[in-house]
Image (cartoon, rainbow, N blue to C red; front, side, top):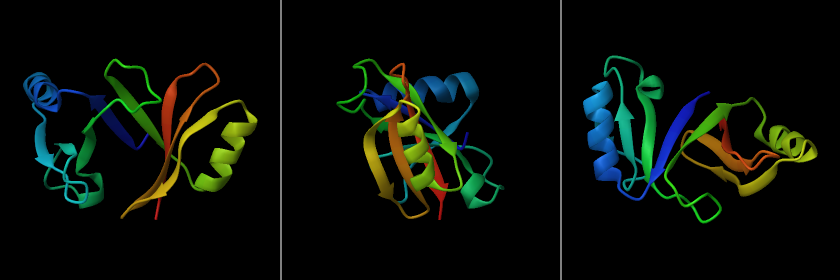
Length: 120
């Protein structure tokens, strides 16, 4: 697991809750400004500094209730998406390239959402 993302309609309330419960700091995203990041140890390398994020949502293909979406780190996103499809998963948001990774969002055969991420 490489990333966790809380998809919620009330980012401010969620951020306040997790700051109180876990002592997490929050920062605005550097690349995607509308995203709020849960910041961990500021002494860690930048790639490891963030535990996850808060984003508006959930997306139209997800249940209407807020949820945590987990991303699994994989070596080859194209091959992993293809294998997931062969095993009964459904792609909900195809492969997208970002500044540091390529990601896709899927539903497993039981309808549970998850993400795949390949570092660039």
